[in-house]
Image (cartoon, one colour):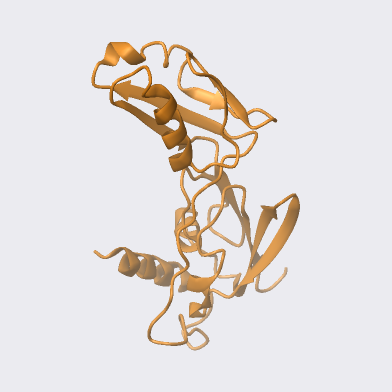
Length: 206
């Protein structure tokens, strides 16, 4: 099944709980919908990275893996890798960190292979969802995928105004998303960033 079609089906399945059939119109708008590009996580102080070193000759990378595969990014944006020493990685994407480490290793190891993954990246989904939770997200996921992972909305969810809180340059930015229109797909919150908090307010308070 095509990725976009799969996402739409997931979205429709949990949006069905937002309102009554008479009230709900899904993704109203143009026939062609532009989807926001998928972003890349940027490494920041406090991130925990899983870095794995390998090569055609496994013996040549034993020392690189000697301290384990978990690396905490220090407050100054650096990690310390056996053999390579202290390396500045903050501000780089995983792909850029891989390129940096590979270029440093190639001087000593033939055909090195480096894998960098985020292991403590999370988003929180709270409020009127069936299973509020903090989700582990090693790569950006869509807002609809995150809502699907927590079981979708309750019948008391206010789907026309879902709040996404995002830490941007030390400040919390609030985004209000109407999930009943196709504006969602072009929104900067269509793909969630690590640390995002999604809050679904109640339609009716008790």
